[in-house]
Image (cartoon, rainbow, N blue to C red; front, top):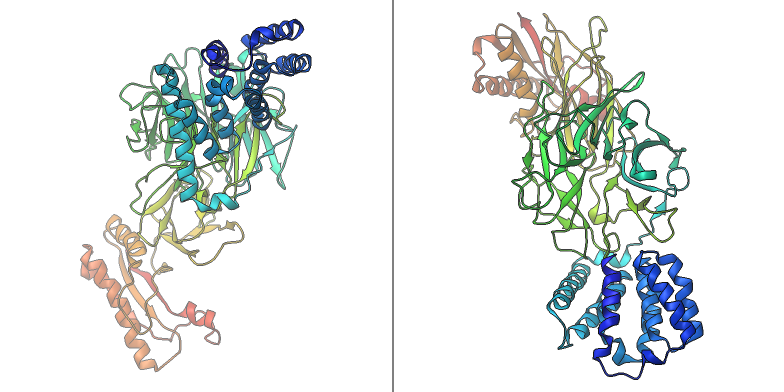
Length: 638
């Protein structure tokens, strides 16, 4: 029997403690007979079928207050809060004294309807009753705390007053009369995967393709993934190549729900593999989410040693493909309650999760977690009403553009049980808008496809935001958060490093990027131009961001300790040529000195300033002059 219903029936039993005008003994017999049938249905949680019986009770006896109040409780269970409040208020109007024990459930439904100030007033009236037992006092105190939280949150977040929350059901192509939950989308917003619970509690994984924001008819995911009936949360990697999920496979696991991985192949999804003892234990592991560079796995586990029932953990993937032993995300994130259902966004900086331990609206709420400038996770923030409610909120997934969120809800207008919905995120709880960069890495001399290391470096703090390895065909896929300047770097032993600058700090990118890259083999006369070293006008002082590329050159020279290089400086044709040659030489010398400071032998290095003597573009336009202002490196000896 549900807690709310238990409270309802318990309250019916204590109503006679109060003096009132209403006398339950004087209700007509027909209404009482109908009421008894309704209560029998309520004891079986059969709320919908109890509604017409209770309505008939009221028709038979318009003064039957217990029928009004019971009907109010039923509408509350069905999340029809406005109808619930209507019934409570009708009962209250007929006898305010008899109504007093109902101020607590009345307050809950006020909060369910978003009327938190009225809910706080109602629960305070409930607490004024001197005859309450300890359990009632604790329940009311808990609700009072959540109502106060809601009011405080609204006062601090003025955006709430202008936020229009209108969840859109994903429709018959995705939802069914069964429960759908744990949505996950690729960074291209082209594939949705989710879990559906069918007959006999069987759980299967489904997918739907997304074209122009429309969903194809969901179909079971192919391969062996759905063979085992006991499964749970599922997620797909941002590039759509990996699928991770929770399951309980006989003879493959550690005696409870474990995390598994399957790979996309030309023949479909591969046979699931257990992620092993670094991640799985004999306890419950579920709700996996993978960082966009596939280097970090976040999940929830009930293993001992945490801070509550279920905690959030993470594990990092090593260059050899193995996972490090999972680590708890710490007491700032995990609570004495259950913290679970993490979702890491494509920006690799924002994580959403659910918790019933952090302050909130009651039950399980959704929270946002952001990385700070040092790369550490900050303090969880509640997503606020009406995304969070007095009910339990489930897992959340957010599209790459940061605008649209997907979640599961059993809203009154759904197709049946839990359905998948999408809605627009409020501006202050959005992640960084993220696009993606993809292409193929090849050998410049022969066109051979090259497995390589790919990095995305934040120019502001020079931290590596993402690092991936291309597949065997040289194909890479990396997300590109808008709003910062990045250096994109590709490296492979035996080749010159490749770098590209993406300046997105002050402009919105409007498309995805496709960049096929040809790496230059290390050989005499091979050269490359620094993309991220932009000297100030008439200055030879290295900019702060120069070390991003220069350290790649340092690594190359240390790895190949016989290579000799020449640093060449170039300018456009603005100004006197004599001064241009001097400036270009000083800039090349600044780079040479940096290399020496990093331990490179002086006798392996030379420099020269060419001024405007070797242009690579016309000096008749600002764009051409910008290209001519450059510093390059050429291999002069092996």
